[in-house]
Image 1 (cartoon, helix red, strand yellow):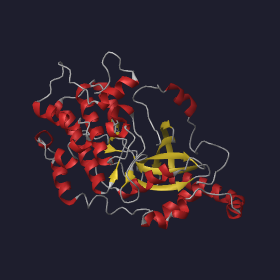
Image 2 (image 1 turned 30 degrees about the vertical axis):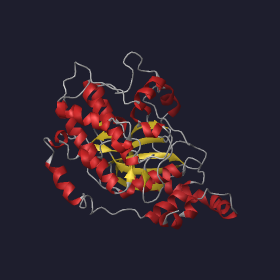
Image 3 (image 1 turned 45 degrees about the vertical axis):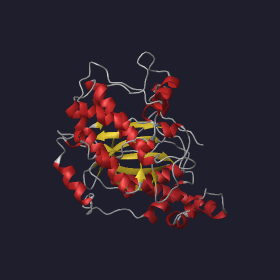
Image 4 (image 1 turned 120 degrees about the horizontal axis):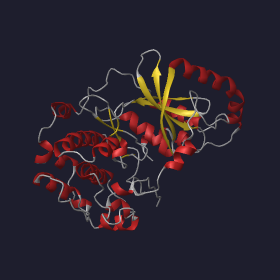
Amino acid sequence: MGPIEAKYSNFITPVMETPAIYVAKRKSGKQQEFRKLEMEERYEAIKDLGSGNFGVARLVRDKKTKELVAVKYIERGKKIDENVQREIINHRSVRHPNIIRFKEVFLTPTHLAIVMEYAAGGELFNRICNAGRFSEDEARFFFQQLISGVSYCHSMEICHRDLKLENTLLDGSPTPRLKICDFGYSKSGLLHSQPKSTVGTPAYIAPEVLSRKEYDGKIADVWSCGVTLYVMLVGAYPFEDPNDPKNFRKTIERIMSSQYSIPDYVRVSADCKHLLSRIFVANPSKRITIPEIKKHPWFLKSLPKEIIEGEKTNYEKVDRDQPRQSVDEIMRIIQEARIPGEASKQPAGGVLDTDDLDAELESDISGDFVTSV
């Protein structure tokens, strides 16, 4: 256990039904009513953004600043686990133009609410679905931003472990800025051991992750970045069997053997093909690294000035004028969120039928895949 984990070990330990907590529950009625009013006073609900295993996400407006922000609501109680804690702490620690900005966490009577930057442009995945596939120049533009954000995370000793198009958002500007989101599977080298669990999304998972042995999360992230680049260029996943794309077993076999090809109808430069061939290497010790990608000729072509300038300072000046919620305060809130709230499962400000949405989800190769070992 590291020094920070040791400091907060009392928060990490599962909450027991002690007399103190029982008393807190008895006194919680007025507190919960106050929090509900506080939420309604601070934010105006605009619309629902979506749902998932975590709960619901909602677009709200800060009544004081008029800023639009996204709020992720997670039901209080047993859902507030180590993954939620890790997501919040890791997300809080990163500040980069290509990463969704963490703002704060707070409690409602029924939910833990995570407030973050709102990306008006939606998912990069949807942009590709609408376009079919990107030109090489457009794919490079987004890949450069993705690598810049991932490189910064790695410099902070955080590996994401679930990089995919659905976890990359766009800010809605005419020249879209990519924003990495969802740190639910991330691991910090400062706080946690080497990753061992098989987490992520099957189409993006590196071979060494599937082997269920200890692996380097940073190198596994490189593979996922390569899958993202390939999908932008081709409009399909690299390791699906073209004749049987929904066959999970075949996909896994092709991932393990790095079996992929670029269709003849897709025009891709030799430099781009070379970079992909250096990424899709089954042996992680021989795979290209993020620092090496940043020196690759294909990556360096038309590199945006803001990335060049930001790399010089490791983005030390990003949002430095914005106050940050302290780790102590966040951990106290997380601890309290482990105590179940009121019976209602819907956060204030509207109703989102998560059962109906979940029923529409397809159980295909792009779905979330989590296995503990």
